[in-house]
Amino acid sequence: MTFPFFPVILFTVSCSEINMRGGKTMWRNRNVWIIISGEFIAGVGLWIGIIGNLEFMQERVPSDFVKSLILASGILAGIMASPLAGRMIDTYRKKTILLCSGFFRIISVLFMFIALAADSVAWMVVFLIAMQLSAAFYFPALQAAIPLIVKENELLAVNGAHMNAGTLARIAGTAIGGSLLLFLSLPMLYLCSIFAYILLFIFTFFLRIDENQGKAGQKADAKKERGFQEVMPAIKSRPAILMTLIIVLMPLLMIGGFNLIVINISEIYGDPSVKGLVYTTEGISFMLGAYFVKKISARRSPFAILGFFSLLMSLGEILLFFVHFKILLFLSFVLFGFSIGCIFPTAATIFQTKMPKEYHGRFFSFRNMLERIGFQVVLLGTGFLLDTIGLPCMVLIYGSLSLLITVLFSAKLRKTGAKREAGMLRF
Picture 1 (tube, one colour):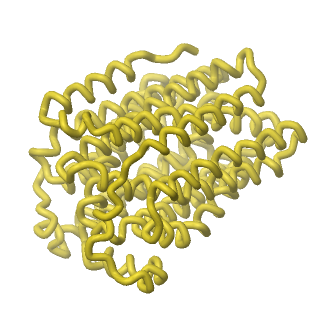
Picture 2 (cartoon, rainbow, N blue to C red):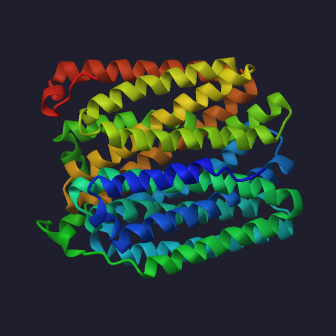
């Protein structure tokens, strides 16, 4: 499997486009380059590790449902840590949180080496728990740090570039991981992964974050101890944030069990290389979506963008019902990838601009916790449904549910009048 160069070209063109359209100041900001480069390097390591995880389980765990239980064990630990993570991110320096969680992630990989040496699934569970605990602190802290290093009008561009870097890393990581498996052992795969995490840790040292921006107008430290109790009223008083939270949970129906779905597709075709093609197709489509949404963001309301592409995403999920037709299979992942490429940067920008900075740590931890709960439920459900009714019927259920949520979302907007408040326009 060779690394596809088209995503690299697309990412370069995307960055050049932003630079030409007035983003020169942003791209001179070394913090932006550190975050994007770090995301790419760590993402490559993460996806090489995921390929290793899937290979390790495929050899030892025959049931899709049991695989989902193993993957869900780590997610549960992340959910339990989220309230503490939110309070700490709002209380302590975000760079300190990023460094500590990055160091813990490096240590976590050592548990996987023990799992390989002992041929033990139990030690793999310990590894997954440690990784998810690290992620529970790292990703909300990163989301809270981005508004502190760029101007508000640059957030959509940075969010898009940051997510594209992660997607490019996913494409590269799966391609490299799949190729390395042909001639390297699993321990060597995880050695590559740990090397990437060490590079990210070093990169984080060079971040310069103005923490005073996030402290303007903050409540007393005693109130921070209330954690999510402080965040809930802030969310309820801002319908735009509440509705966006609902929309961004919808893609989890596919993303939650994505790796299991890809494994199942490769088993249907009897061809392991299909896994890499699916990851690449979805990844390139995501990058195209993130590039496209920057083009239309000035002319369309963010809620119009979310509504339209949620509908398109639902259709992509339903189309996967025809998984045995290769053209329709890849068209399904094109629609899904392109849609979430438009949805995620738009939603991230809404969260970063509409939610006051003093709540960012707790809010992003709360969102992270919601996503992990949804991820866990979907992961277990996907494993169970793949074992019982099969992939075609499962995606028909998921797609129909996404379509129903999109319709209810649009109806709720009109009924509550939040459409006018959010400035929503027809697409």
